[in-house]
Amino acid sequence: MRLFKGVGIGVAVSWCVPGSVWAVCPVCTVAVGAGVGLSRYLGVDDTIAGSWIGALTVSVILWTNSWLEKKNIRFRFRDAVVTLLYLVLVVVPLYWSDIVGHPLNTLWNVDKLILGIAVGGGVFYGAVQWYAYLKARNNGRSYFPFQKVVMPLVAVALVSIAFYVITK
Image 1 (cartoon, helix red, strand yellow):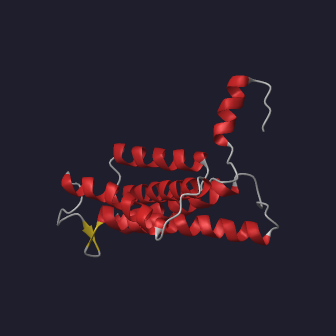
Image 2: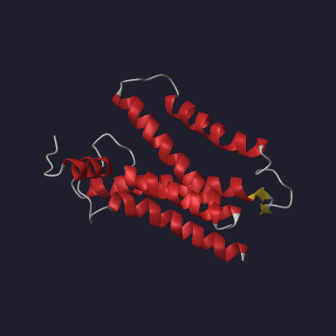
């Protein structure tokens, strides 16, 4: 149990401190969500917005699978089912609202938003796995404060920069 001197500050900080069962910390998820909102608001290219949408989706998938594991809810192909469910919940509404599927909004013959979602989600997941690998090699300790947050966000930011260069 964590003890804090200020109740309000303690509650706020406890929401931001990753627990042992969280796959991705809340700060990272909030930062990714902010990136999605900001990029769409600023009219950024769909590959870049898609990268953040993909990262947010993977973050939620990891959180859900971690929560199910914590609650001992297990069934065959659980991780695959959760992944497919979230991808359907993200992509189908985008398709129905004609945001995805426009023939002139493609890069390398793939819809820009779908491409961004796939690449951003894959890079985010890879960075989370890389963090876990590095932490395991360092006796269960991070190399620097907030490494769990920094690594995935920097990875998605680098993908965003790469897409910016490619699409401009």
